Length: 273
Image (cartoon, rainbow, N blue to C red; front, side, top):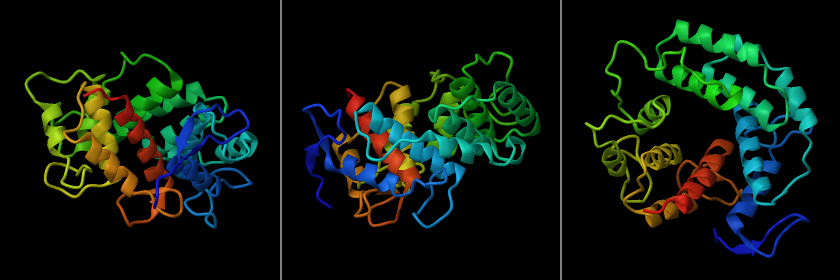
């Protein structure tokens, strides 16, 4: 696909240009917005909380750049989110995505229910992913300090990780304060592969989600990829004819990988290494 440069969409456009892939990504997400509320993986499937979260993240990012690819009406989205199953029945990840979607759509986040969920879930599990999303729910959505909570899982070394995603989660829990005894940025840089993307850990196959987590972690550590242009090329090669981005070139596009691609390209643009 040719990545052309075009004028910005929307009546409030300024005389700057926007990459064609970003305009096409806006069209891609709008086709997955359901008239009855929420977003779906394909135009014919029912909405999910995960797709709604990523769809709203994409549209919010586009709006910040003056792009309005489709009519914005948060009412149906709020109705869809309000009808979802109680938070207690969801994982911490889905609960975070639901309440984050509420916030993105201009709804009121249930603070008391969020705090109750975090306290209950932290008492139920030591799983890193659950504790990570509980942490993000409290910090990003509720906006509350977290001195009363123990985030790091018990039973293992605090900085024991297998994948770049696990390292990103640990760095988030620690507010980016990594131990000085480990070259974590160096390890993350070694995750970059010959095609410019990033693997789960050094020597593994590259996928979009790995690159997003590696770039976020490197940014938090004040570092950059070994090959920034190669990384950008890998991401753009995942853009396909649907307008969205896939986990890997030639694969199917998803709202999640499209959001990860857009956010990753922003991180690359902001990096100074």
